[in-house]
Structures are given as C-alpha cells and as structure tokens.
Length: 200
Image 1 (tube, rainbow, N blue to C red):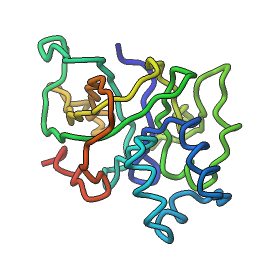
Image 2: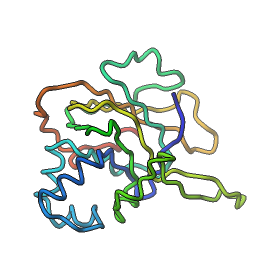
Image 3: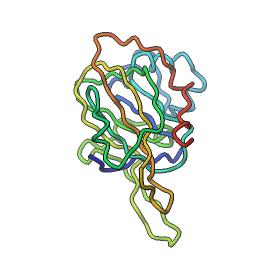
C-alpha cells in the first residue's frame, strides 16, 4: 500500500531501528548529534552499527520523494501494481527492537539526530517544499513503519513506475524484502553499494 513518500533531501535516507541505534550509541558512549558527519570520522562505529543491523543507509540517489514498500518473507512481484524492478541488492542486516518499528529518516535529518524528534503520535516528521508555481506542499523527512521485532536479512529492490509522472518526480521507490534469521551474518556493506543503478 502506497502512502507517504520519504524525501531524500540529502541525496539519501537511512532505514533505522531507533531504539537499537540508541543502544549502540550508549554501548560506545557516542553523544554526537551530527550522525552522518560522525560516521565519516569514526568508521569503526559506523561498521559496528551496520553489523548489528541497526541501520541501512540508502545513499547517492537523486533528490526526490520515494515510495517505500516492505514485505516480511517473499514478496509476490506480480502484486507490485504499477511498478517494475530496475535493480536489486542482497545481504543486508536489520534488527527490529521491542517497539516493533523502524523508521526511514532523511540524511539531512540524521545530521540533527534526536530520538525525541521521532513523533510517536503522528509517525512522521514533515517539512515543506514549493513547486515552480510557488505552491506549498508537504514532504516527509522521516516516516515510521511497523515491523515485528526480530532479526532480518534484507534484500532491496529498486523500483520504477511503469508509467512515469510527467513532472519527473516520485517515479522511483524501494521494496525491502525481510527474511527472519536467528543470527545476523550478512556482510554486505551498504556504504559500498551502488544504489544509483536504480536510475540506469
């Protein structure tokens, strides 16, 4: 079901388990709020978070608003109404905590990280943008998704609309196919993954 679309203002977004991420920060005594900047300084902490499955960065993608779909187990691709698969990437870790939720958070928003900003009542952080006629529209900087608490191996599919919007926007998305596992063993490094293949 399509609903809100995540805005990639910083040319990307992060799939994150907020409570697990906060545990990682506490374990390593990390207090920095500019998370993306800190990752560039402390690669060990970044790879610790990746290995623990608390975040998956989707980066080097065009500025746009992306549809995100999630499937527990195999997704029947015939049900991807209006979408076609453009690319796929395998072997990412994801760990969902007791809150049974993950968030998609824009990279810009990760640079001012505060878990309290993730509005539990609304399930999103919103902002605004203006079209060429100076009309104001809502965009979503962070969106919550309800996913059962568990460990998952994740396969990511890049999606493109079969019939493109004429304005060139909101024509792409991602499907995250989650398979439950007992132990997180995937070694794929999302920071080395070329998500720009979606646009080829």
